[in-house]
Image (cartoon, rainbow, N blue to C red; front, side, top):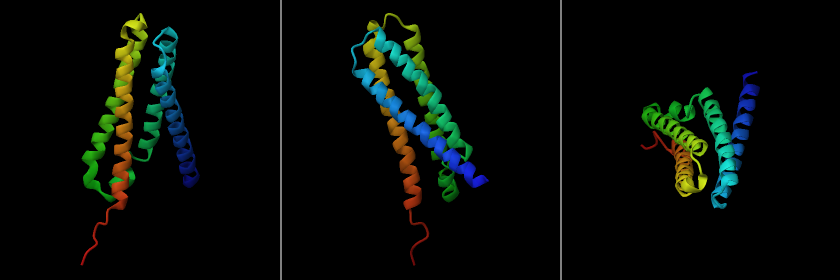
Length: 149
């Protein structure tokens, strides 16, 4: 029973990761569109969907223990893992702030370039975070600890 639960969690997590990828692509496309009220409305929709998707994805990752497979092998890496968790929370908070600015600010044309730059920076930060997560997992499983004499 536990095994099938694990499989379901993996499936749902994969679905969230796919949705995140699609939403980020949509946001990238919107950042290339002319800055008008329609673009602003769609940016609000996409950032809202990301604000729903990203925390759910993170929650699923934490259910089994955030980067638990790394911490099992290398418990002394807990500060790095904690730092990644904190960074992820800061990334969510920045997106929430950007979404709030999209909601409150009008007219969009006056803040469009600033918002667009900030959203691009946010996407770069999220991608760097994902790379760091992958790197720590890969490093943990590629280290040859204990080999020698």
